[in-house]
Image 1 (tube, rainbow, N blue to C red):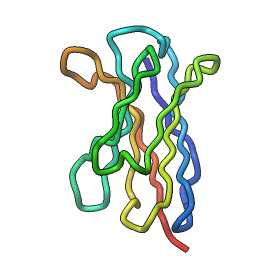
Image 2: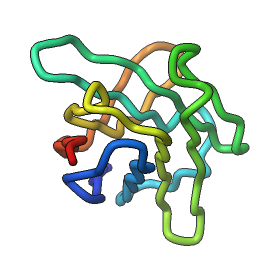
Image 3: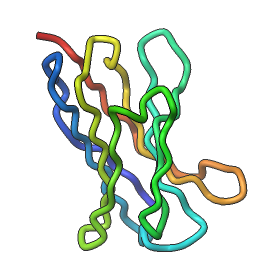
Image 4: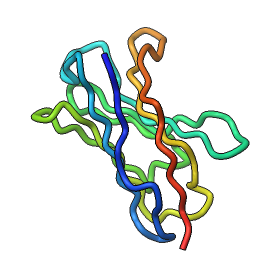
Length: 118
């Protein structure tokens, strides 16, 4: 299984950040998995943002819930992240990852740098 993030590397403040994770080697509609977005701001630890499962049920970090949307495109075996009203504090390396029940992230994308700046 491979995951690959894609999207713009630079976003202006107040705009919406949109990233896509393309999954190969496995279907995103398989149960037991949660398809997740995780980020790491410079000099800080990993921050879980949210996830979506095979039945399109979504879960979001309480601190980001009002600005975050995760969806699936099953026809292209992709899932996407949208983060609205970004500020420079949203500058981070963004990762997509597969969470396998009961308790492990078994596959990660390589990460993509997103900078929020005017």
